[in-house]
Image (tube, rainbow, N blue to C red; front, side):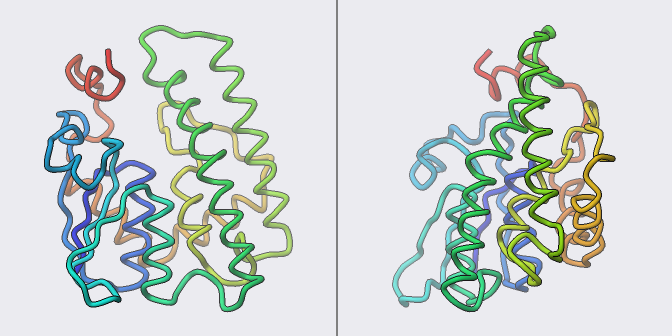
Length: 228
């Protein structure tokens, strides 16, 4: 039903988390971002920002031709609306889910990504940048920890796309781990999602798609990823 253009990164994991939870049939179309697959003309026809993930739904709800969606947050919203799942049962729940999804898209993801760039991938350390993004990520983790107090999940007692969006961005860099000890609610929530069978299935795909994950980047990979 769905072609998923994917590489095992936090944004890619968001979509496999949903698809595995929902049980939707899908086919992975690897987009090797280290080789520059994201710049191929065919891919750019439906993902014009040369980023993955993207999907093509061959059975959209309107019964028309294949429908493509790019940007991970937009894909999560599309799939939630398609299936009627993981987006809340009423307007107030949907507002909660939507605002925390946007929080991840605008804050947690970009700031953690910048932290990872300067702490892991930059050719030389820049102390100001590392300190700036470390402190901002820690602030955002504190916001999430406070939000989770008294709630099983971000938007309440139900697992939603807000959780699927945020979860992959919690401490994703093994070479530059953050101290999560100050955030007990976040650690409880993170462990609960890690234990879900769908999460384990989603993350098992990473090694299948990219057996070289975690190895040092080549100069060609740096050029494709960072324009260097």
